[in-house]
Length: 149
Image 1 (tube, rainbow, N blue to C red):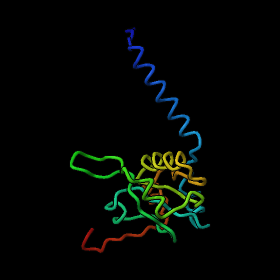
Image 2 (spheres, rainbow, N blue to C red):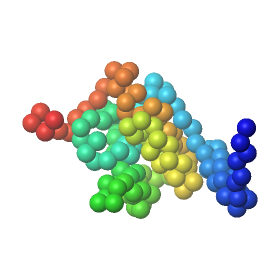
Image 3 (cartoon, rainbow, N blue to C red):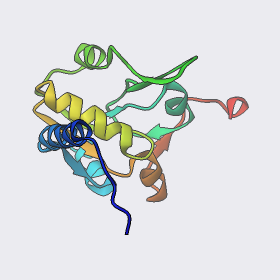
Image 4 (cartoon, rainbow, N blue to C red):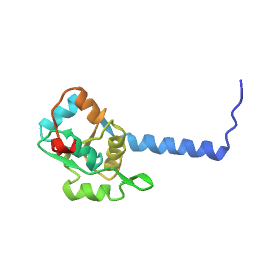
């Protein structure tokens, strides 16, 4: 059996990052798509954090839905939207009831973590994202015409 030698500073950094992520994620609540659908039907706002293009191709059909991308496409690849919290605060207040969703559940988890850390009181991550929503045959809406698909 080979022994892996890791520099002490790297181990410390990994442990620190793990601790910070655990602390930040401690207040994040993830619900499945069925629970999210129920909450949306009771008045929760659905915050779709996918790109505008993904959103136009198809999104959760909800009475209150907003698209604010968490990640932006740039010539250097995807980067976190530096204005994400500012853009959310322009349409939501910290007491609003929010369900956050993305394509598969990864970006929404990061976005939810950021929102909770910023003081939003009732924000939930939709586990499985839009893919799971579609898989369950829940209602969807598209902003594209047939010629755009």
